[in-house]
Structure formats: C-alpha cells, structure tokens
Length: 80
Image (cartoon, rainbow, N blue to C red; front, side, top):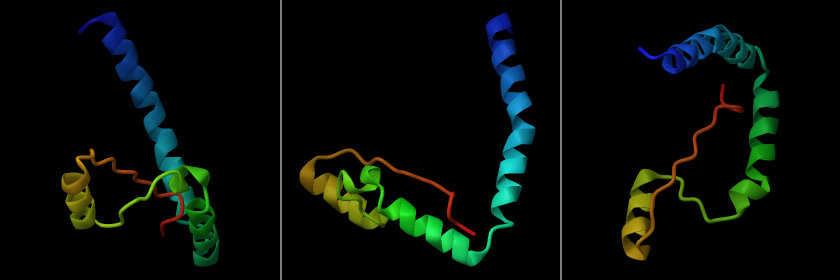
C-alpha cells in the first residue's frame, strides 16, 4: 500500500467516529423538527432547479423517453 493510500485510509478511519455522533444526534430530534426540516429542504432552490421524479419507475420512464441520465439525490437530514 502506498503512503498516500495509507493516509487516505487513516483519514477515513478518523472520520468514522464523527459520523456515528452525527447520526445518533438526528435520532434525538422530535418528529415536528424533522418535519420542519423536510419542508425547508423541499423549498430549496437546488430541488426546484429541475423537475425531480419521486419514484424509480417514473424516473426510468422519463429517462428513456427524454434520453436523460438518472441522477439520484439521497439525504437523511430530515428523516426519523
């Protein structure tokens, strides 16, 4: 293993505990707070820039019809 790959691996391993702290903090939020964050995310200009399909079937149909790639956007900032 080269030194640069080893450094990347060490950096990723160092971030691992932080990811557990962040994800456990989300579970402590109330359903109302999660709903508020979801609504706020839906109003973002990023999501309004294009028409997003909400199911894989409709995305595949539209991609075939319009010769478009499928781009998936996953987030958990508002999910319980």
